[in-house]
Image 1 (spheres, rainbow over the protein chains, first blue to last red):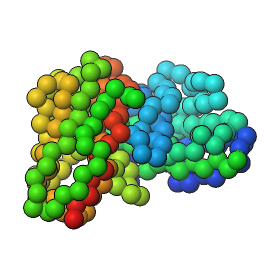
Image 2 (cartoon, chains in turn yellow, brown; image 1 turned 120 degrees about the vertical axis):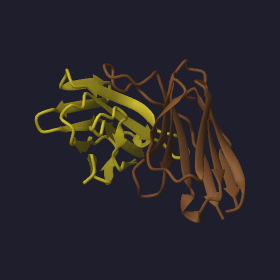
Image 3 (cartoon, rainbow over the protein chains, first blue to last red; image 1 turned 30 degrees about the vertical axis):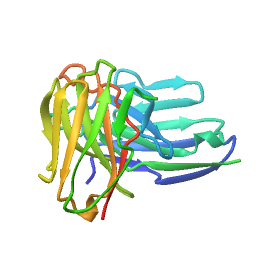
Length: 113
Length: 117
């Protein structure tokens, strides 16, 4: 199976609603969990990250929560806006001694005005 | 603008051609990466360089040949590609990779959209 599983693959919400994207990982030694946003025609860009010594981190309308016991972390976007429409990727180290994050398959978020 | 510049932005090449993709960063980073992004597939790590030394080659076919002459520049040399190699090729950089710090934020370029005909 994949080292990083991301769900859902697509998410459609109305402007102002909240959106939640979840990722699970396999390596219990993982300690760094970033989320990237990729807009059309651009490369992915980091929007928020969390390290294993905290359970939650917020930055305005964006938050990431981490559950190390269950080995999953989630991206929360509140008060969504049309400009939040993009593909979002989570990443986590695959384990086996590698520190290079493996990316999830991505979630296409569509925010309808 | 992320500070990572890729050229060209678009490239169409025949299967017998030889071409090179270029990536440049002046962020003072010491780790650079090549990723392949195909439709409906996760971002695939191809190569990693840390302090100019190749540290990972993710079972990439030899028709892809990376080169890292210094910490600021990364190339991907292409020859005798196949149509299934058509994809978006992304370059990224980060401060460095080490055992204690693990991975840090990666900055991506805008990618080169490659079409093999």
